[in-house]
Length: 163
Image (cartoon, rainbow, N blue to C red; front, side, top):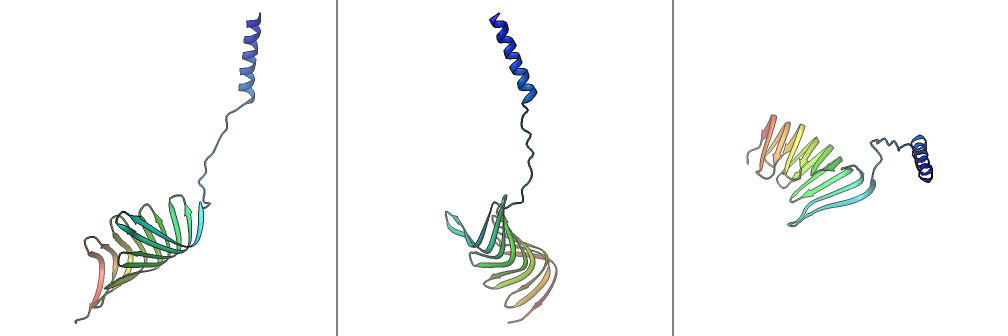
């Protein structure tokens, strides 16, 4: 008789559990709220060989894997990049609005630039204006490979000064 009452109580408990308790239903939504915000910052990327990248900004917002930056200034080796806006993520730097690139003997301006930090390739998908002491080049789709030291572009228009 006691085993009968135990089984009835057990089945009643399990039946009540199934009737009244339900598992949680969780819906995941992508969040656009920033993980953190920073003002007037300097970010330095260090490697075993030393400082590889110096990144300065007036304001930054971190969302997921991307750091959005306003008032961007980038220094690497003997080059310097300036832009109004940018984003940094996954070893890629995307610069927008009034992008200026400066190096010892060369500078150029554009509205959008993509900088692959690992491969050291700077791409300008739109129009650009490049200047050196002896020439001025305007064109589209600039690809500057810093490792090799080559510049490729399309639809170029150049004026060259003689020394």
